[in-house]
Length: 394
Image (cartoon, rainbow, N blue to C red):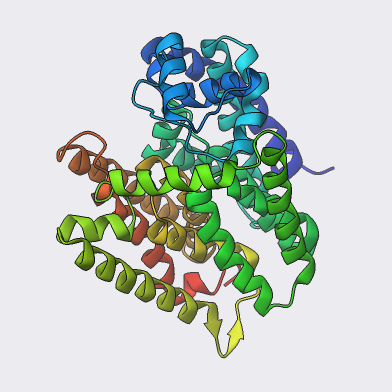
């Protein structure tokens, strides 16, 4: 008989059984500690509420009026996501904001845990210590705390990416394409990530995956168009306003250019140069011995930091997506050097992220620009070590 400790399915069940009550306790603490009406999720809830009542979530006057009436998300000026997302949120708005936030945060925590369990399947020789280390790293990673506190979308996006990696690795290309297309629920990250992924899929001639992405994108557009046929144009105008308003504050190359250059022309030029350099580096490491990288997991590990760097805008809590490359690095370190080196990397990335958040906040609340160093650190830590680049089984 197989020892339960070595049965990965039993271990996964134990992990879920242990962490579900932990999530409940943590959520109760969050609810007491932070005012739900001041968090970003309040804007999600308001968008769902307004959609139910036939209001225009992209109309500033309607949004502010409803915000004042409900007392929600005082810093928001309009909804900054696709209309399909607001429609998906509508059922949550039938609950009170506190109840909806509790449920949404639980969904986010479970999405992160499920993502980790999916990624663990790529490392069958893992120890129980490694599993606990990876889970603790993911949940103690400061962006994870921030995203759970605020209730943003990143944990769900993390699950979409993990599922797409799983399906692509098993050559279920259509399913993987459909799942990864849901990244468009957050276009500022979804568009660059899907553009990079589509180029890779095109190079591999995976037409079913590309068809899945195209169908998923059309479906998201169509769902919103049933409610408002002009929603894309309205959304794009909001995206430009957001980019201009927060330029120089975020964790992207464009914002970093805004820190060093006050001239708009120089900012744009520096941003373009930075993006080109990053894409060139990514392309170089995707092509080894003139062969395009075939490991979907490693491709995602390369593309996720690139996405955060070249995105038009992204906040430090969206670095929660770095959980995937961080876990990959933990796997490769454990495989090549042992669990102790993995633990050392875990401590390093958590500490660096915490320090960068303190540094950024010292320049004013919401000024996340210096947190870009966390993305750069994770990306280059992976790329700079040949034995890690070779993969988990190196």
